[in-house]
Length: 516
Image 1 (tube, helix red, strand yellow):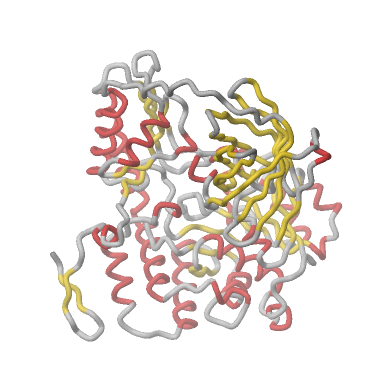
Image 2 (image 1 turned 180 degrees about the horizontal axis):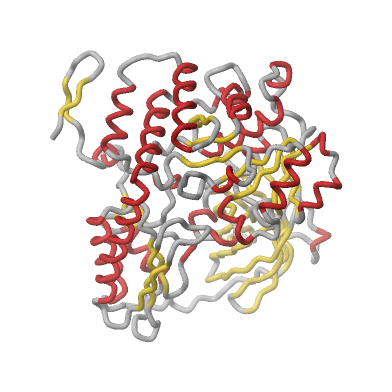
């Protein structure tokens, strides 16, 4: 066990990997999702950790550090300048702030705006992080054609933001939008947080003014960091609209150790790290493939990188008649085992699992391959059939009161029933959609997804009917269609709810409202 030294010179033992989490009662996981934010980031190389630890041993003028790192990033990436931000979402906010206010103190200190400016996005490139744009006080306006820009008051358009992974399949050609932005003098931002950095960068070369990358995804720098690269004037303005100054972005603070760690990680990635990572990913896939194919009846598909995923993945599938177990059941079993293995629930099919090797070591790939193969092939013991229970009649209109951690609202259900199966309409405070579920005895489970912008709003109601009232908990979330797994459908926690019957028998007779 290695020894570390505190700032006062005291020696102390380094805890074993993962032990600091176990001491808090949190069991570490093996991350097969490719997602880092939800699962605690990445495993930086020893050199990155060493650089971060060394940078924490002394003080520095942050402006001088930013200037030096800006020059280094320019030399490393070919951009005019760059800065390290507190994650990619912060880079979006600082980029938009730069486009709105520059370094004009009067404009800077008025941020956030009140909707005076608009940031244009492609209608087929919506992302979950548009709140980073709205945080600056700008409206978000989707367009479907570059010519739509000609219908807008250009003086009100602060910037255009497109998503790198969606550009190849978008109906809005990048070359066309880049040409129009140059003609109109509108800054063009490319959010490439989900892509592995590659330089020289095709988007900067072909007209983008600003480029955003993650400091954690792929390159394994500090998960709390991101990069903003591109136009020197706009990058410098973005820095001044962020920490350490008393500006709009002061809350988006990034420490000197994180700045150094992010830069070292990107430098190593550019100087051979990308090649080494690809070799490791393919080695992990080969290890898992051997484990899967050792079980007769399992099928394996190697998924090559594409515009959305910069690394290969592996899928394993099986016939239900041979292995009568669902992917959902396997995922739950692995997540509850030791070691805990977490799969991406949004990629699952009924008898298909996809494993992303981004966050795996070769030792972990061995464990994952063996564990999944065993979980699929072990004899399946079906759960005992629940005893037949009578079911309550829930057909009709219900007024639904939801109490959040802070605040409350009133929704409504208009339900139809066929035996134990429930269907109908869930009416929210502003929007409505269909719902479906089942009642067993007095216990109800009801699921709905209300339309949202840019994400759909997910509700999973669990409740009990007693004395004519429904009461229970509702799980809250939001998800895009391509990531509509349990993780995102429950990402906003839960609330309590209760419902009472109303005399109304159609949607217009049920009142919904948001309460304080």
